[in-house]
Length: 242
Image (cartoon, rainbow, N blue to C red; front, side, top):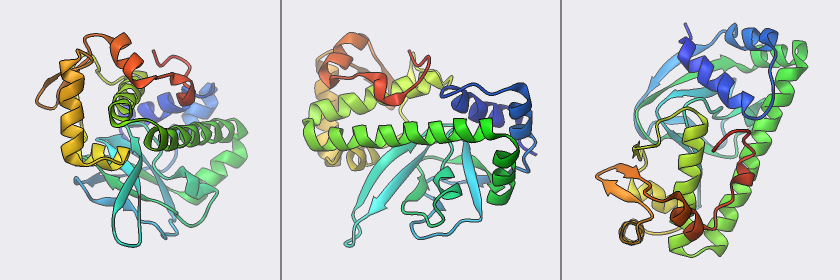
Protein backbone atom coordinates (compact mmCIF):
# COMPACT_ATOMS: atom_id res chain seq x y z
CA UNK A 1 0.00 0.00 0.00
CA UNK A 2 1.28 3.44 -0.93
CA UNK A 3 2.11 5.51 2.18
CA UNK A 4 0.24 8.78 2.28
CA UNK A 5 3.33 10.89 2.86
CA UNK A 6 4.92 9.39 -0.28
CA UNK A 7 1.99 10.12 -2.57
CA UNK A 8 1.52 13.51 -0.91
CA UNK A 9 5.08 14.50 -1.87
CA UNK A 10 4.37 13.52 -5.48
CA UNK A 11 1.11 15.45 -5.52
CA UNK A 12 2.92 18.40 -3.92
CA UNK A 13 5.56 18.29 -6.66
CA UNK A 14 2.87 18.30 -9.36
CA UNK A 15 1.07 21.20 -7.69
CA UNK A 16 4.22 23.30 -7.94
CA UNK A 17 3.43 23.36 -11.66
CA UNK A 18 -0.36 23.54 -11.77
CA UNK A 19 -3.59 23.14 -9.83
CA UNK A 20 -5.23 19.79 -9.24
CA UNK A 21 -8.86 19.34 -8.27
CA UNK A 22 -9.77 17.17 -5.27
CA UNK A 23 -11.09 14.58 -7.74
CA UNK A 24 -7.76 14.45 -9.58
CA UNK A 25 -5.82 14.17 -6.32
CA UNK A 26 -8.01 11.28 -5.18
CA UNK A 27 -7.56 9.55 -8.55
CA UNK A 28 -3.76 9.79 -8.24
CA UNK A 29 -3.93 8.36 -4.71
CA UNK A 30 -6.10 5.48 -5.95
CA UNK A 31 -3.60 4.27 -8.56
CA UNK A 32 -2.29 0.72 -7.86
CA UNK A 33 1.12 1.81 -6.57
CA UNK A 34 3.76 -0.81 -5.74
CA UNK A 35 6.48 0.06 -3.23
CA UNK A 36 10.07 -1.12 -3.75
CA UNK A 37 13.07 -0.54 -1.48
CA UNK A 38 16.20 0.44 -3.38
CA UNK A 39 19.81 0.41 -2.22
CA UNK A 40 22.39 3.07 -3.01
CA UNK A 41 23.72 2.82 -6.60
CA UNK A 42 21.04 0.31 -7.67
CA UNK A 43 19.37 1.02 -11.02
CA UNK A 44 15.72 1.94 -11.33
CA UNK A 45 15.96 2.17 -15.12
CA UNK A 46 18.65 1.53 -17.69
CA UNK A 47 19.12 3.22 -21.04
CA UNK A 48 17.45 1.11 -23.73
CA UNK A 49 14.79 -0.33 -21.41
CA UNK A 50 11.19 -0.43 -22.61
CA UNK A 51 9.48 -0.12 -19.22
CA UNK A 52 6.01 -1.40 -18.45
CA UNK A 53 5.89 0.70 -15.27
CA UNK A 54 6.74 4.26 -14.33
CA UNK A 55 7.95 5.30 -10.90
CA UNK A 56 8.19 8.14 -8.42
CA UNK A 57 10.78 8.65 -5.71
CA UNK A 58 9.24 8.24 -2.27
CA UNK A 59 12.36 8.45 -0.11
CA UNK A 60 16.04 9.04 -0.73
CA UNK A 61 17.67 10.69 -3.74
CA UNK A 62 18.35 9.53 -7.29
CA UNK A 63 20.12 10.68 -10.41
CA UNK A 64 19.52 10.57 -14.13
CA UNK A 65 22.61 9.84 -16.15
CA UNK A 66 24.07 8.97 -19.52
CA UNK A 67 27.18 6.92 -20.31
CA UNK A 68 29.57 7.41 -23.17
CA UNK A 69 30.84 4.55 -25.31
CA UNK A 70 33.99 4.31 -23.18
CA UNK A 71 31.96 4.02 -19.96
CA UNK A 72 32.34 7.51 -18.50
CA UNK A 73 29.28 8.96 -16.80
CA UNK A 74 27.52 12.30 -17.01
CA UNK A 75 24.82 12.95 -14.42
CA UNK A 76 22.15 15.05 -16.12
CA UNK A 77 19.82 15.71 -13.17
CA UNK A 78 19.17 14.88 -9.53
CA UNK A 79 15.80 13.65 -8.24
CA UNK A 80 14.21 14.46 -4.88
CA UNK A 81 11.45 12.72 -2.88
CA UNK A 82 8.20 13.32 -4.74
CA UNK A 83 9.80 13.54 -8.18
CA UNK A 84 8.64 11.37 -11.07
CA UNK A 85 11.69 9.38 -12.17
CA UNK A 86 10.78 8.19 -15.65
CA UNK A 87 7.37 9.56 -16.64
CA UNK A 88 8.90 10.46 -20.01
CA UNK A 89 8.32 6.78 -20.78
CA UNK A 90 4.57 7.39 -20.79
CA UNK A 91 5.14 9.23 -24.07
CA UNK A 92 8.48 7.84 -25.31
CA UNK A 93 8.54 4.06 -25.19
CA UNK A 94 12.30 3.46 -25.01
CA UNK A 95 14.38 4.98 -22.22
CA UNK A 96 17.24 7.17 -23.50
CA UNK A 97 18.69 7.64 -20.02
CA UNK A 98 19.37 5.64 -16.88
CA UNK A 99 18.07 6.29 -13.36
CA UNK A 100 20.31 5.22 -10.47
CA UNK A 101 19.80 5.67 -6.76
CA UNK A 102 22.18 8.24 -5.24
CA UNK A 103 21.29 6.99 -1.74
CA UNK A 104 19.28 4.21 -0.18
CA UNK A 105 15.60 4.91 -0.69
CA UNK A 106 12.15 3.82 -1.78
CA UNK A 107 10.35 4.14 -5.08
CA UNK A 108 6.70 3.59 -5.95
CA UNK A 109 5.88 2.02 -9.31
CA UNK A 110 2.64 1.84 -11.25
CA UNK A 111 1.78 0.21 -14.57
CA UNK A 112 1.85 2.57 -17.52
CA UNK A 113 -1.59 1.47 -18.67
CA UNK A 114 -3.05 2.49 -15.30
CA UNK A 115 -1.55 5.96 -15.60
CA UNK A 116 -2.66 6.32 -19.23
CA UNK A 117 -6.20 5.32 -18.24
CA UNK A 118 -6.13 8.02 -15.55
CA UNK A 119 -4.90 10.61 -18.06
CA UNK A 120 -7.79 9.71 -20.38
CA UNK A 121 -10.32 10.19 -17.56
CA UNK A 122 -8.63 13.21 -15.93
CA UNK A 123 -7.02 15.42 -18.63
CA UNK A 124 -6.15 17.92 -15.87
CA UNK A 125 -3.66 15.40 -14.45
CA UNK A 126 -2.09 14.98 -17.88
CA UNK A 127 -1.62 18.72 -18.25
CA UNK A 128 0.09 19.04 -14.86
CA UNK A 129 2.34 16.02 -15.46
CA UNK A 130 3.30 17.42 -18.86
CA UNK A 131 4.09 20.79 -17.28
CA UNK A 132 6.26 19.09 -14.66
CA UNK A 133 8.15 17.23 -17.40
CA UNK A 134 8.63 20.49 -19.32
CA UNK A 135 10.02 22.05 -16.14
CA UNK A 136 12.46 19.14 -15.89
CA UNK A 137 13.50 19.82 -19.49
CA UNK A 138 14.14 23.46 -18.55
CA UNK A 139 16.44 22.26 -15.76
CA UNK A 140 18.32 20.13 -18.28
CA UNK A 141 18.86 23.19 -20.50
CA UNK A 142 20.24 25.08 -17.52
CA UNK A 143 22.63 22.22 -16.77
CA UNK A 144 23.97 22.46 -20.35
CA UNK A 145 24.73 26.14 -19.75
CA UNK A 146 26.21 25.31 -16.35
CA UNK A 147 28.70 22.75 -17.61
CA UNK A 148 29.40 24.54 -20.88
CA UNK A 149 29.71 28.21 -19.96
CA UNK A 150 30.33 28.65 -16.23
CA UNK A 151 33.66 28.20 -14.49
CA UNK A 152 34.12 25.57 -11.78
CA UNK A 153 33.30 27.92 -8.90
CA UNK A 154 30.12 29.14 -10.59
CA UNK A 155 29.07 25.62 -11.62
CA UNK A 156 29.18 24.20 -8.13
CA UNK A 157 27.62 27.30 -6.55
CA UNK A 158 24.80 27.16 -9.12
CA UNK A 159 24.18 23.48 -8.47
CA UNK A 160 24.05 24.07 -4.70
CA UNK A 161 21.56 26.91 -5.21
CA UNK A 162 19.36 24.66 -7.33
CA UNK A 163 19.52 21.78 -4.85
CA UNK A 164 18.59 24.03 -1.93
CA UNK A 165 15.72 25.79 -3.73
CA UNK A 166 14.27 22.51 -4.97
CA UNK A 167 14.61 20.90 -1.54
CA UNK A 168 12.81 23.79 0.13
CA UNK A 169 10.06 23.74 -2.50
CA UNK A 170 9.47 20.06 -1.76
CA UNK A 171 9.31 20.58 2.02
CA UNK A 172 12.78 19.26 2.83
CA UNK A 173 14.72 20.89 5.67
CA UNK A 174 17.28 23.34 4.24
CA UNK A 175 18.37 25.46 7.22
CA UNK A 176 20.94 22.75 7.90
CA UNK A 177 20.97 20.58 4.80
CA UNK A 178 22.57 17.15 4.65
CA UNK A 179 24.01 17.02 1.15
CA UNK A 180 23.06 13.56 -0.13
CA UNK A 181 25.48 13.54 -3.06
CA UNK A 182 29.13 12.50 -2.89
CA UNK A 183 31.92 14.61 -4.32
CA UNK A 184 32.19 12.07 -7.14
CA UNK A 185 28.51 12.54 -7.96
CA UNK A 186 28.85 16.33 -7.81
CA UNK A 187 31.86 16.02 -10.12
CA UNK A 188 29.92 13.93 -12.66
CA UNK A 189 27.09 16.48 -12.54
CA UNK A 190 29.35 19.47 -13.19
CA UNK A 191 32.00 18.05 -15.53
CA UNK A 192 34.75 18.37 -12.90
CA UNK A 193 36.92 15.91 -11.00
CA UNK A 194 36.26 14.97 -7.35
CA UNK A 195 39.53 16.67 -6.38
CA UNK A 196 38.42 19.87 -8.11
CA UNK A 197 35.01 19.69 -6.41
CA UNK A 198 36.71 19.41 -3.02
CA UNK A 199 38.89 22.41 -3.82
CA UNK A 200 35.90 24.51 -4.92
CA UNK A 201 33.89 23.57 -1.82
CA UNK A 202 36.78 24.77 0.32
CA UNK A 203 36.91 27.97 -1.70
CA UNK A 204 33.17 28.62 -1.28
CA UNK A 205 33.55 27.97 2.44
CA UNK A 206 36.45 30.42 2.67
CA UNK A 207 34.37 33.07 0.88
CA UNK A 208 31.53 32.69 3.37
CA UNK A 209 29.10 31.43 0.73
CA UNK A 210 28.58 28.12 2.56
CA UNK A 211 29.49 26.55 5.89
CA UNK A 212 30.24 22.82 6.10
CA UNK A 213 30.25 20.28 8.91
CA UNK A 214 30.92 16.95 7.26
CA UNK A 215 28.06 16.41 4.80
CA UNK A 216 25.92 19.12 6.43
CA UNK A 217 25.77 22.48 4.66
CA UNK A 218 24.39 25.81 5.79
CA UNK A 219 24.29 29.03 3.81
CA UNK A 220 25.31 32.01 5.96
CA UNK A 221 24.46 34.43 3.15
CA UNK A 222 22.18 33.37 0.32
CA UNK A 223 23.02 36.62 -1.51
CA UNK A 224 26.73 35.71 -1.60
CA UNK A 225 26.11 32.20 -2.94
CA UNK A 226 23.55 33.46 -5.44
CA UNK A 227 25.88 36.19 -6.70
CA UNK A 228 28.78 33.77 -7.18
CA UNK A 229 26.50 31.41 -9.12
CA UNK A 230 24.70 34.08 -11.12
CA UNK A 231 21.63 32.16 -10.02
CA UNK A 232 18.13 32.98 -11.29
CA UNK A 233 15.53 30.40 -10.30
CA UNK A 234 13.16 31.11 -13.22
CA UNK A 235 14.35 27.94 -14.98
CA UNK A 236 12.84 25.84 -12.17
CA UNK A 237 9.32 27.12 -12.95
CA UNK A 238 8.21 26.80 -9.34
CA UNK A 239 5.32 28.75 -7.87
CA UNK A 240 6.69 29.22 -4.37
CA UNK A 241 10.23 27.88 -4.32
CA UNK A 242 11.67 30.70 -2.25
